[in-house]
Length: 501
Ligand code: HEM
Image 1: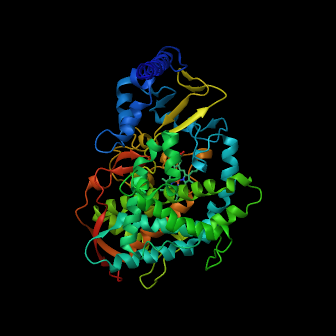
Image 2 (image 1 turned 60 degrees about the vertical axis):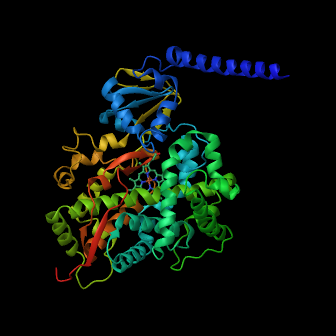
Image 3 (image 1 turned 90 degrees about the vertical axis):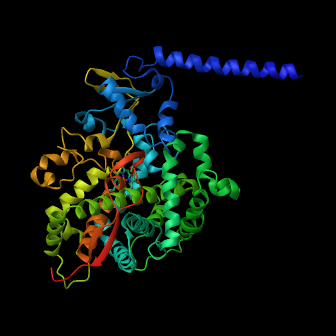
């Protein structure tokens, strides 16, 4: 009995090893990408990239940096996974991120807009959201944005001592997207203790997101955490339980009210998810619990971190440069008299050239998304110089390598808003929101939030940086969104601004 058990195990193990060996031989010698440059290990397995994503250093987040190093060794095109090549050449960027319907995303089991593989299926999902992110729609929710910024300002005024602006910016952006989608605010700007737990929980999920998405079983478990016993919910991270609480105690009941048609917005504005659920042209399965949950979580994640980070970058850089800070405040005062309480409109602020250049430069340096963005043409080859990448093979680039490309942005690590004022040609390379049919849907919301918040903070307060340095802001880690080396946030001491400016 015992022997037959051992023999069976040996047979099974041999089958597995033979399969893996066969796959390795196929990947190295016979795969359509076999002739592309790159190390053997990445041709054989995805595990190499997953190691840099998850494990290398203290907590991974190093895959993009490693890809950059591989390019130094192998040239502008490198095979970074058995079925994927990565390109480091900004001149190719617009060939990969555009409106060509044949450029699709790779297959994914995550049923949300961002992960939808085919162009046709993506169109259906995007059409349901697009009208609510148009310029006119975002202007309609300006009162929601400005009232949330007023709460942020109160919180900054009321905090004694040092203020962690990065933390409060994240709370504010979360609050805006949550209220826009589900009508009821989360009140993060009223309760620092509750919000601190919640922001930590979301950040900890970001840090495991990329590897989780690679392994369908783990991804399935993460998406259904709330159905597991409490002790298991804690396993993914220390914050596991509170992440479940974000959903269970916060977003889910709000969504429930929306589903029952009981949610109301005080000022009569639209409630995004209510409109989504009422949409009769949308296939019924798009309104299932799993899909709607994914839509809400994706919007919250995408809407919170990126915009918050860009605002942290802007305030940090300005407060390191007193002259530029003074010029920015003076420019804002041309449209915002000292006697006026309310924030000027988004459309007024966006006419200010220096403020616009400051925001562009802040978004450039803070990247938006740190990870490579993968595209695939299933019908025909993608041509890069002399390389013909066969149909079905994945091709990726990092927008971070474009935004820090020294050939385009001289001294790319320097914060120089003036570069945007000097040359309109640079706008072609303003790609933090990506480009084309899969570009950011929240771009206009992000712009409105950033103009209104930065103007408000600069107009209302005089601040000094407190123990904040480049390591607290410059992106280093790639956990899909970027994280800096040290996560103390942009910290400041604050005085109300003198109004006789
Ligand atoms: C500075 C702020 C922001 C930056 C730099 C940014 C950047 C990006 C980028 C690069 C993508 C493409 C990702 C990909 O190809 O997989 C994207 C997609 C997306 N973003 Fe943003 N984003 C920002 C703010 C927002 C906000 C405020 C929202 C709120 C709703 C949002 C929602 C989304 C969604 C839903 C997608 C997926 C769109 C699709 O696949 O059709 N983003 N964003």
